[in-house]
Amino acid sequence: MQFLSRKARTVLPYTAGEQLRDRQYVKLNTNENPYPPSPRVTEALARVAGDDLRRYPRPDAGLLRAAVAEREGVSPENVFCGNGSDEVLALSFPAFFDGDGAGACFADITYSFYEVFASFFGIPHTVVPLRGDFTLDLAAMQQTPCRGYYIANPNAPTGIGVHRDAMEAFVAAAKDKIVIADEAYMDFFGESLAPLTKRYPNLLVVKTFSKSYSLAGIRCGYAVGDAALIEGLFRMKDCFNSYPVDAVCEAVCTAALSDEGYHQRTTARIVQERERLRGALLALGFTVPKSDANFLFAGRAARSGKEIYTRLKQEGVLVRFWDKPVLRDFCRITVGTPEENDVLLQKLENILK
Ligand SMILES: *Cc1c(COP(=O)(O)O)cnc(C)c1O
Image (cartoon, helix red, strand yellow):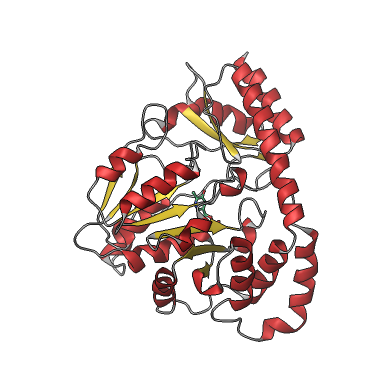
Protein backbone atom coordinates (compact mmCIF):
# COMPACT_ATOMS: atom_id res chain seq x y z
CA MET A 1 0.00 0.00 0.00
CA GLN A 2 2.96 2.35 0.68
CA PHE A 3 3.32 3.23 -3.01
CA LEU A 4 -0.34 4.10 -3.46
CA SER A 5 -1.60 7.64 -3.37
CA ARG A 6 -4.05 8.68 -0.67
CA LYS A 7 -6.74 8.58 -3.31
CA ALA A 8 -5.88 5.04 -4.45
CA ARG A 9 -5.89 3.88 -0.85
CA THR A 10 -9.22 5.40 0.07
CA VAL A 11 -11.52 5.41 -2.97
CA LEU A 12 -14.58 3.18 -2.93
CA PRO A 13 -14.73 1.67 -6.44
CA TYR A 14 -17.97 0.65 -8.14
CA THR A 15 -18.97 -3.00 -7.71
CA ALA A 16 -20.24 -4.50 -10.96
CA GLY A 17 -22.59 -7.50 -11.13
CA GLU A 18 -20.99 -10.94 -10.98
CA GLN A 19 -19.59 -12.39 -14.19
CA LEU A 20 -19.14 -15.97 -12.95
CA ARG A 21 -17.75 -18.68 -15.22
CA ASP A 22 -17.67 -21.60 -12.75
CA ARG A 23 -20.80 -23.15 -14.24
CA GLN A 24 -23.54 -22.47 -16.77
CA TYR A 25 -25.92 -19.92 -15.25
CA VAL A 26 -29.20 -18.48 -16.37
CA LYS A 27 -27.77 -14.99 -16.15
CA LEU A 28 -30.34 -12.40 -15.13
CA ASN A 29 -28.10 -10.13 -13.04
CA THR A 30 -26.56 -7.39 -15.22
CA ASN A 31 -29.41 -6.26 -17.47
CA GLU A 32 -27.80 -7.67 -20.58
CA ASN A 33 -29.99 -8.24 -23.62
CA PRO A 34 -31.00 -11.91 -24.05
CA TYR A 35 -30.95 -11.60 -27.85
CA PRO A 36 -27.89 -11.22 -30.08
CA PRO A 37 -27.18 -7.88 -31.77
CA SER A 38 -28.36 -7.21 -35.33
CA PRO A 39 -26.88 -9.51 -38.01
CA ARG A 40 -25.44 -6.34 -39.57
CA VAL A 41 -23.04 -6.19 -36.63
CA THR A 42 -21.48 -9.51 -37.71
CA GLU A 43 -20.97 -8.18 -41.23
CA ALA A 44 -19.42 -4.96 -39.91
CA LEU A 45 -16.99 -6.93 -37.73
CA ALA A 46 -15.66 -8.87 -40.70
CA ARG A 47 -15.30 -5.69 -42.74
CA VAL A 48 -13.44 -3.66 -40.12
CA ALA A 49 -10.83 -6.37 -39.49
CA GLY A 50 -9.63 -6.06 -43.10
CA ASP A 51 -8.00 -2.67 -43.27
CA ASP A 52 -9.09 -0.37 -40.46
CA LEU A 53 -7.27 -1.89 -37.51
CA ARG A 54 -3.76 -0.86 -38.49
CA ARG A 55 -4.80 2.81 -38.30
CA TYR A 56 -5.82 4.90 -35.34
CA PRO A 57 -9.58 5.43 -35.34
CA ARG A 58 -11.25 8.79 -35.93
CA PRO A 59 -10.41 10.90 -32.85
CA ASP A 60 -13.89 12.45 -32.92
CA ALA A 61 -15.77 9.19 -33.70
CA GLY A 62 -17.15 11.17 -36.65
CA LEU A 63 -18.81 8.30 -38.50
CA LEU A 64 -20.65 7.09 -35.43
CA ARG A 65 -21.57 10.61 -34.29
CA ALA A 66 -23.20 11.24 -37.66
CA ALA A 67 -25.23 8.02 -37.33
CA VAL A 68 -26.27 8.85 -33.77
CA ALA A 69 -27.17 12.41 -34.82
CA GLU A 70 -29.43 11.02 -37.52
CA ARG A 71 -31.15 8.67 -35.10
CA GLU A 72 -31.68 11.42 -32.51
CA GLY A 73 -32.65 14.15 -34.97
CA VAL A 74 -29.75 16.46 -34.03
CA SER A 75 -26.45 17.55 -35.64
CA PRO A 76 -23.15 15.70 -35.14
CA GLU A 77 -21.88 18.70 -33.12
CA ASN A 78 -24.58 17.78 -30.58
CA VAL A 79 -23.24 14.25 -30.06
CA PHE A 80 -20.37 12.91 -27.95
CA CYS A 81 -19.37 9.22 -27.92
CA GLY A 82 -17.40 7.39 -25.27
CA ASN A 83 -16.16 4.01 -24.12
CA GLY A 84 -19.46 2.98 -22.54
CA SER A 85 -21.94 5.50 -21.17
CA ASP A 86 -20.01 4.99 -17.93
CA GLU A 87 -17.13 6.91 -19.48
CA VAL A 88 -19.45 9.62 -20.78
CA LEU A 89 -20.92 9.97 -17.29
CA ALA A 90 -17.44 9.96 -15.72
CA LEU A 91 -16.23 12.79 -17.98
CA SER A 92 -19.41 14.76 -17.28
CA PHE A 93 -18.43 15.28 -13.63
CA PRO A 94 -15.24 17.32 -14.27
CA ALA A 95 -16.84 18.87 -17.38
CA PHE A 96 -19.80 20.39 -15.53
CA PHE A 97 -18.90 20.47 -11.81
CA ASP A 98 -16.19 21.99 -9.66
CA GLY A 99 -14.64 20.72 -6.47
CA ASP A 100 -15.95 23.69 -4.53
CA GLY A 101 -19.31 25.43 -4.31
CA ALA A 102 -22.61 23.81 -5.27
CA GLY A 103 -22.21 20.24 -6.47
CA ALA A 104 -24.25 17.42 -7.93
CA CYS A 105 -27.63 16.18 -6.74
CA PHE A 106 -29.09 12.70 -7.29
CA ALA A 107 -31.44 10.21 -5.66
CA ASP A 108 -30.24 8.00 -2.78
CA ILE A 109 -31.34 4.94 -4.68
CA THR A 110 -30.13 5.19 -8.25
CA TYR A 111 -27.19 4.12 -10.40
CA SER A 112 -24.44 3.79 -7.81
CA PHE A 113 -21.71 4.95 -10.20
CA TYR A 114 -22.81 8.61 -9.71
CA GLU A 115 -21.62 8.52 -6.11
CA VAL A 116 -18.36 6.78 -7.12
CA PHE A 117 -17.60 9.35 -9.84
CA ALA A 118 -18.50 12.32 -7.63
CA SER A 119 -16.18 11.06 -4.88
CA PHE A 120 -13.39 10.21 -7.33
CA PHE A 121 -13.44 13.69 -8.88
CA GLY A 122 -13.92 15.39 -5.52
CA ILE A 123 -17.30 16.88 -6.46
CA PRO A 124 -19.60 17.75 -3.54
CA HIS A 125 -22.91 15.91 -3.83
CA THR A 126 -26.28 15.69 -2.12
CA VAL A 127 -28.53 12.64 -2.21
CA VAL A 128 -32.31 12.96 -2.03
CA PRO A 129 -34.32 9.96 -0.75
CA LEU A 130 -36.86 8.29 -3.03
CA ARG A 131 -40.49 8.47 -1.96
CA GLY A 132 -42.12 5.51 -0.19
CA ASP A 133 -43.38 4.09 -3.50
CA PHE A 134 -39.82 4.15 -4.92
CA THR A 135 -40.56 7.06 -7.27
CA LEU A 136 -38.13 9.96 -7.60
CA ASP A 137 -38.88 12.96 -5.39
CA LEU A 138 -38.41 15.56 -8.13
CA ALA A 139 -40.00 18.30 -5.97
CA ALA A 140 -37.43 17.73 -3.21
CA MET A 141 -34.62 17.62 -5.75
CA GLN A 142 -35.79 20.94 -7.16
CA GLN A 143 -35.49 22.49 -3.68
CA THR A 144 -31.96 21.17 -3.20
CA PRO A 145 -29.19 23.74 -3.69
CA CYS A 146 -26.81 22.34 -6.33
CA ARG A 147 -25.16 23.02 -9.67
CA GLY A 148 -26.86 20.17 -11.48
CA TYR A 149 -28.66 16.83 -11.39
CA TYR A 150 -28.12 13.22 -12.40
CA ILE A 151 -31.39 11.44 -13.10
CA ALA A 152 -31.47 7.84 -14.31
CA ASN A 153 -34.68 7.58 -16.31
CA PRO A 154 -35.97 4.89 -16.03
CA ASN A 155 -34.31 4.66 -12.63
CA ALA A 156 -32.16 1.74 -11.52
CA PRO A 157 -32.60 -0.62 -9.79
CA THR A 158 -36.31 0.21 -9.43
CA GLY A 159 -37.12 0.27 -13.15
CA ILE A 160 -39.52 3.19 -12.68
CA GLY A 161 -39.56 5.88 -15.38
CA VAL A 162 -40.67 9.52 -15.31
CA HIS A 163 -42.85 10.65 -18.22
CA ARG A 164 -41.51 13.21 -20.68
CA ASP A 165 -43.85 16.01 -19.57
CA ALA A 166 -42.77 15.78 -15.93
CA MET A 167 -39.11 15.64 -16.93
CA GLU A 168 -39.51 18.63 -19.22
CA ALA A 169 -41.11 20.65 -16.43
CA PHE A 170 -38.18 19.71 -14.20
CA VAL A 171 -35.59 20.74 -16.82
CA ALA A 172 -37.42 24.02 -17.48
CA ALA A 173 -37.58 24.82 -13.75
CA ALA A 174 -33.91 23.92 -13.29
CA LYS A 175 -33.00 26.88 -15.59
CA ASP A 176 -29.27 27.49 -15.05
CA LYS A 177 -28.64 24.11 -13.43
CA ILE A 178 -27.63 21.29 -15.73
CA VAL A 179 -29.81 18.16 -15.90
CA ILE A 180 -28.02 14.99 -16.97
CA ALA A 181 -30.65 12.42 -17.93
CA ASP A 182 -29.13 8.93 -17.97
CA GLU A 183 -31.40 7.10 -20.41
CA ALA A 184 -29.63 3.72 -20.38
CA TYR A 185 -33.02 1.93 -20.38
CA MET A 186 -35.08 4.50 -22.27
CA ASP A 187 -35.73 2.34 -25.34
CA PHE A 188 -37.86 0.06 -23.13
CA PHE A 189 -39.95 3.12 -22.09
CA GLY A 190 -40.04 5.36 -25.17
CA GLU A 191 -40.11 8.77 -23.48
CA SER A 192 -36.67 10.10 -24.37
CA LEU A 193 -35.80 13.72 -23.72
CA ALA A 194 -33.27 13.75 -26.58
CA PRO A 195 -35.51 15.86 -28.89
CA LEU A 196 -35.77 18.49 -26.11
CA THR A 197 -32.02 19.11 -26.06
CA LYS A 198 -32.58 21.54 -28.94
CA ARG A 199 -34.74 23.73 -26.72
CA TYR A 200 -32.93 23.38 -23.39
CA PRO A 201 -29.21 24.25 -23.31
CA ASN A 202 -29.04 22.85 -19.74
CA LEU A 203 -30.13 19.33 -20.76
CA LEU A 204 -27.69 16.50 -21.53
CA VAL A 205 -29.14 13.10 -22.47
CA VAL A 206 -26.85 10.07 -22.07
CA LYS A 207 -27.58 6.74 -23.77
CA THR A 208 -25.83 3.41 -24.29
CA PHE A 209 -25.50 0.59 -26.81
CA SER A 210 -25.18 -1.91 -23.93
CA LYS A 211 -28.81 -2.62 -23.19
CA SER A 212 -31.40 -2.32 -25.98
CA TYR A 213 -28.78 -2.70 -28.75
CA SER A 214 -27.36 -5.83 -27.14
CA LEU A 215 -23.76 -4.56 -27.32
CA ALA A 216 -22.58 -4.51 -23.71
CA GLY A 217 -19.30 -6.13 -24.81
CA ILE A 218 -18.35 -3.33 -27.20
CA ARG A 219 -18.43 -0.57 -24.52
CA CYS A 220 -20.07 2.38 -26.23
CA GLY A 221 -22.35 5.15 -25.04
CA TYR A 222 -23.14 8.69 -26.09
CA ALA A 223 -24.43 12.04 -24.97
CA VAL A 224 -26.78 14.38 -26.86
CA GLY A 225 -26.96 18.06 -25.97
CA ASP A 226 -26.21 21.66 -26.77
CA ALA A 227 -22.91 22.10 -28.65
CA ALA A 228 -21.39 23.94 -25.66
CA LEU A 229 -21.98 20.93 -23.39
CA ILE A 230 -20.57 18.55 -25.99
CA GLU A 231 -17.51 20.79 -26.31
CA GLY A 232 -16.98 20.50 -22.54
CA LEU A 233 -16.99 16.70 -22.77
CA PHE A 234 -14.50 16.79 -25.67
CA ARG A 235 -12.19 19.04 -23.65
CA MET A 236 -12.15 16.50 -20.80
CA LYS A 237 -11.73 13.49 -23.12
CA ASP A 238 -8.80 15.06 -24.92
CA CYS A 239 -6.97 15.50 -21.62
CA PHE A 240 -7.35 11.83 -20.88
CA ASN A 241 -7.61 9.57 -23.95
CA SER A 242 -8.08 10.90 -27.49
CA TYR A 243 -9.34 7.61 -28.93
CA PRO A 244 -11.86 6.13 -26.51
CA VAL A 245 -14.08 4.84 -29.34
CA ASP A 246 -12.04 2.30 -31.31
CA ALA A 247 -12.48 1.36 -34.97
CA VAL A 248 -14.34 -1.88 -34.18
CA CYS A 249 -16.72 -0.06 -31.86
CA GLU A 250 -17.43 2.65 -34.39
CA ALA A 251 -18.16 0.16 -37.18
CA VAL A 252 -20.27 -2.13 -35.00
CA CYS A 253 -22.40 0.60 -33.41
CA THR A 254 -22.97 2.34 -36.73
CA ALA A 255 -24.14 -1.00 -38.16
CA ALA A 256 -26.47 -1.56 -35.20
CA LEU A 257 -28.02 1.89 -35.69
CA SER A 258 -28.66 1.10 -39.36
CA ASP A 259 -31.00 -1.76 -38.40
CA GLU A 260 -33.72 0.06 -36.47
CA GLY A 261 -36.29 -2.58 -37.42
CA TYR A 262 -34.34 -5.32 -35.64
CA HIS A 263 -33.78 -3.03 -32.65
CA GLN A 264 -37.48 -2.32 -32.34
CA ARG A 265 -38.52 -5.96 -32.71
CA THR A 266 -36.16 -7.26 -29.99
CA THR A 267 -37.02 -4.36 -27.67
CA ALA A 268 -40.76 -5.02 -28.09
CA ARG A 269 -40.22 -8.70 -27.33
CA ILE A 270 -38.43 -7.87 -24.09
CA VAL A 271 -41.13 -5.40 -23.05
CA GLN A 272 -43.82 -8.01 -23.69
CA GLU A 273 -41.90 -10.63 -21.73
CA ARG A 274 -41.33 -8.13 -18.89
CA GLU A 275 -45.07 -7.80 -18.43
CA ARG A 276 -45.59 -11.58 -18.43
CA LEU A 277 -42.75 -12.09 -15.92
CA ARG A 278 -44.08 -9.35 -13.65
CA GLY A 279 -47.53 -10.95 -13.67
CA ALA A 280 -46.04 -14.32 -12.72
CA LEU A 281 -43.94 -12.80 -9.91
CA LEU A 282 -46.98 -10.99 -8.51
CA ALA A 283 -48.84 -14.32 -8.58
CA LEU A 284 -46.00 -15.84 -6.52
CA GLY A 285 -46.56 -13.17 -3.86
CA PHE A 286 -43.76 -10.78 -4.80
CA THR A 287 -44.02 -7.01 -4.56
CA VAL A 288 -42.94 -5.72 -7.98
CA PRO A 289 -43.17 -2.02 -8.93
CA LYS A 290 -44.29 -1.53 -12.50
CA SER A 291 -41.12 -1.43 -14.59
CA ASP A 292 -40.29 0.73 -17.60
CA ALA A 293 -36.91 -0.97 -18.16
CA ASN A 294 -35.61 -4.46 -19.07
CA PHE A 295 -35.56 -5.64 -15.46
CA LEU A 296 -37.85 -6.03 -12.47
CA PHE A 297 -37.31 -5.03 -8.85
CA ALA A 298 -38.91 -7.82 -6.85
CA GLY A 299 -39.20 -8.45 -3.11
CA ARG A 300 -41.19 -10.92 -1.08
CA ALA A 301 -42.36 -10.37 2.48
CA ALA A 302 -40.65 -12.65 5.03
CA ARG A 303 -37.96 -13.67 2.55
CA SER A 304 -34.94 -11.39 2.36
CA GLY A 305 -33.46 -10.44 -0.97
CA LYS A 306 -30.31 -12.24 0.11
CA GLU A 307 -32.15 -15.52 0.70
CA ILE A 308 -33.83 -15.38 -2.72
CA TYR A 309 -30.55 -14.41 -4.40
CA THR A 310 -28.51 -17.12 -2.61
CA ARG A 311 -31.03 -19.93 -3.22
CA LEU A 312 -31.37 -18.95 -6.90
CA LYS A 313 -27.61 -18.93 -7.30
CA GLN A 314 -27.40 -22.46 -5.88
CA GLU A 315 -29.99 -23.41 -8.47
CA GLY A 316 -27.94 -21.85 -11.29
CA VAL A 317 -29.89 -18.60 -11.72
CA LEU A 318 -28.07 -15.29 -11.13
CA VAL A 319 -29.97 -12.17 -10.07
CA ARG A 320 -28.63 -8.98 -8.48
CA PHE A 321 -28.78 -8.26 -4.76
CA TRP A 322 -27.47 -5.32 -2.67
CA ASP A 323 -26.96 -5.58 1.08
CA LYS A 324 -28.08 -2.00 1.73
CA PRO A 325 -31.07 -0.39 3.46
CA VAL A 326 -34.28 -0.53 1.35
CA LEU A 327 -32.53 -2.59 -1.35
CA ARG A 328 -31.91 -5.61 0.86
CA ASP A 329 -35.58 -6.63 0.77
CA PHE A 330 -35.43 -6.92 -3.03
CA CYS A 331 -33.62 -8.51 -5.93
CA ARG A 332 -33.20 -7.01 -9.37
CA ILE A 333 -34.08 -9.50 -12.07
CA THR A 334 -33.16 -8.92 -15.71
CA VAL A 335 -35.83 -9.97 -18.21
CA GLY A 336 -34.43 -12.94 -20.15
CA THR A 337 -35.82 -15.02 -22.99
CA PRO A 338 -39.18 -16.69 -22.29
CA GLU A 339 -37.29 -19.96 -21.66
CA GLU A 340 -34.88 -18.34 -19.18
CA ASN A 341 -37.74 -16.62 -17.38
CA ASP A 342 -39.58 -19.93 -17.11
CA VAL A 343 -36.53 -21.51 -15.46
CA LEU A 344 -36.41 -18.60 -12.99
CA LEU A 345 -40.11 -18.92 -12.17
CA GLN A 346 -39.85 -22.66 -11.68
CA LYS A 347 -36.88 -22.33 -9.33
CA LEU A 348 -38.68 -19.60 -7.38
CA GLU A 349 -41.73 -21.80 -6.99
CA ASN A 350 -39.56 -24.56 -5.50
CA ILE A 351 -37.71 -22.16 -3.21
CA LEU A 352 -40.94 -20.69 -1.86
CA LYS A 353 -42.53 -24.07 -1.10
C1 LIG B 1 -25.95 -0.07 -17.60
C2 LIG B 1 -26.05 1.34 -17.17
C3 LIG B 1 -25.15 2.31 -17.62
C4 LIG B 1 -23.83 1.95 -18.22
O1 LIG B 1 -23.82 1.54 -19.43
P1 LIG B 1 -22.49 1.29 -20.26
O2 LIG B 1 -22.78 2.02 -21.50
O3 LIG B 1 -22.44 -0.19 -20.41
O4 LIG B 1 -21.29 1.84 -19.55
C5 LIG B 1 -25.37 3.64 -17.29
N1 LIG B 1 -26.39 4.00 -16.53
C6 LIG B 1 -27.25 3.11 -16.02
C7 LIG B 1 -28.37 3.57 -15.16
C8 LIG B 1 -27.09 1.76 -16.32
O5 LIG B 1 -27.89 0.85 -15.77
